[in-house]
Image (cartoon, rainbow, N blue to C red):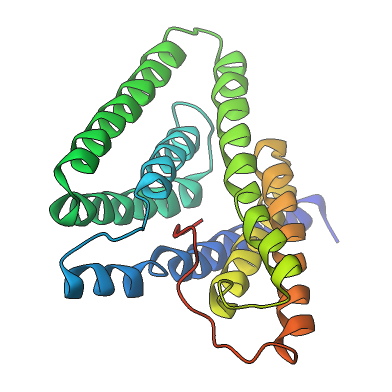
Length: 235
């Protein structure tokens, strides 16, 4: 096989993995919908937290910025998935603000402005770096750190499942979507030789596998159906 043929197969595989990641990510994006149906039905945010949506928005914006041609070439599928994710998070934040109590609403608006301010600082600061390799490394490290911390958030749920021996707060399709999306972008990062993509998504893949193993392990001993996750987030 020629080098050109091998390169073409690699590119096709990379694009296929990226498209699959975009599709599987949709399962994460829509996962909070049952929670917001409940919020709208009851006219209250109850004990639900809006922080996951604020943090997810920041994560999506940083990763979106990393995927743009100004930072890294040939990462259009990273830009598309995070653009869609950011749009979903904005909708969730707006809905949360509509039904939140005044004190929580003020706090959420403050956090939202802070997140937007942080992103503007990252955007403007990265554009001040003339060397393209250094600019990519700067934004890449930020996106990698953001993704790793995002994938680490289910550790609380994993700990709860082990402690209670119940899968009540760990919906199967959310865990499955997390695994499939992470694995797809892990392959995408490997095929594009981009450590800023395959390292965090490799960690996400491992955590996704752990969640699925725990789900099937405790499914037989749990008599309760899964409810909304305690920490409601697409990621």
